[in-house]
Length: 304
Image (cartoon, rainbow, N blue to C red; front, side):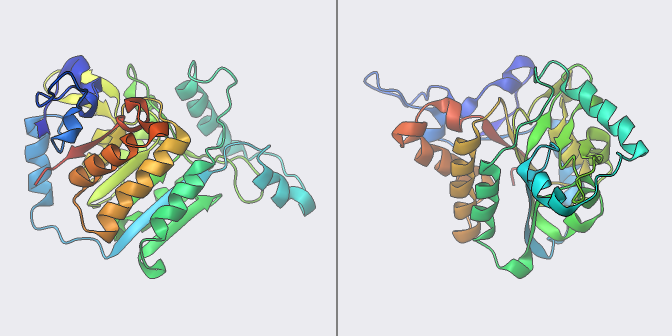
């Protein structure tokens, strides 16, 4: 089922809506009967098809960026600094820090971004499914902005990013993905992958998965849909993007992604069908049966 939503409907979890096939008063979700994929608008779909026509697939399978280091108090930093001499922060990190503080203002009362420990498990479960020679594992300090914009991701058919995302629906330019804010020497660095950085990427991936909170939101432009991270990655060359509609649970997301990637990489299921199957499988588990845990993620992009 192709979904072209408008306005506030773009924030609606269609997978969890009641299905017309429901009978005898039993709850039945739309995802039980349909594979769902969304597109921002017909004009965007047309542009994507022209961009993708005849494009050869990337040579390698999966690149995973996960479990970055956000804080100097992280035990990974403390371990590195046990025998290190502290250095003053580099001067050029100050503008980046200012941008990030502006972006997260009002989102986190403490002003700090907590570690997402289950993203590490998520990364490991994905990478177990592909040969090491065809995969990239960037975790801890290696999950950084410099690597993301270096061009190395161009070689991968699937790019998976599991971290915090920052969405600003009023000023989309303040949106972005937060990668490691601390380098391997324990020093602050620019780890904020801004929307403008994403637009400037060369990323001819079959699929980009943004395993983070609210990555499917943005500013609604009449006739064009939402302007945010989804559009940025599509502009960069991604044929499809998996994004979330609300603040997702770290552990439930790791469980969902393990199912999702198993179906895609082990059994060759297409992303829209793989997501539907994984959501329904997770929903059958008593712990995760609430749509809150599984319905946030949607597939957007070219549906052919």
